[in-house]
Length: 287
Image (cartoon, rainbow, N blue to C red; front, side, top):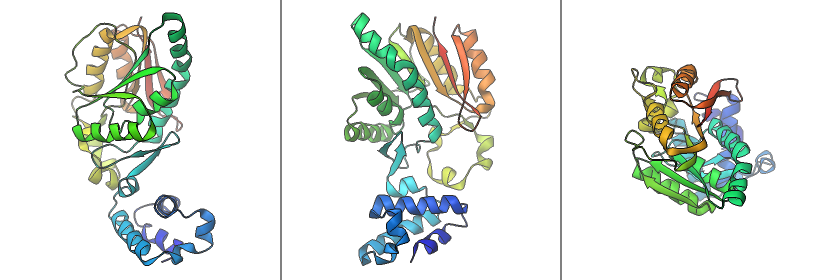
């Protein structure tokens, strides 16, 4: 089966451009074929074993299984992270959040080391695959990063990603809905918590609904700010003075989250648009 035929098999699930991108990624990651190889017809020259493996992959993709789960990897901030159905697949928007944090706190972290002789502490609440925690650990020199999640499966995957990518992250089992107040521990708290209401499910793609973990996606319709409320209440006491809080959010609730943060006394509360112009992130500072 050639490249065009492989793409056609996915045309009922994805648009033409996405189908082609998925097939190219499969051929690259699993079989080491470049675009030049593809155009030269090397897809049809795969060994019988590789052809059998490719057919198994295509059958999974035809059932709407996300290609990241099929291959076991996802690209994020220029690195490959292991993923499995127990964790949310890292999104490009979350990579934008990491870039925002890195740009804003990299210099502060270095100054903290020089002037105060202490570590710059970062907490990732609901780490999933560990993509945020690992990225910040690698991109912000001398930062001490801790990551929490309630899922043991997620923590195992996140730990594996930290080891394979050479990141120094401390992982802990912790429930974001049962955080105890503590005094001035963190310089940065970041979270991409569940934020999709159940009523929005009928607007979502089948590959997300069938395969990605509900607990990492959904919140009750009557309490869309469930996780944000618990995390910001914790951050009030747990952030150091001038500490920073970062959220990835559902754009529908940007104003509500901003108002809640301001009522709790946070300052410089700002909604930030993603590359598509949607209010996707919120950042705030503690006095």
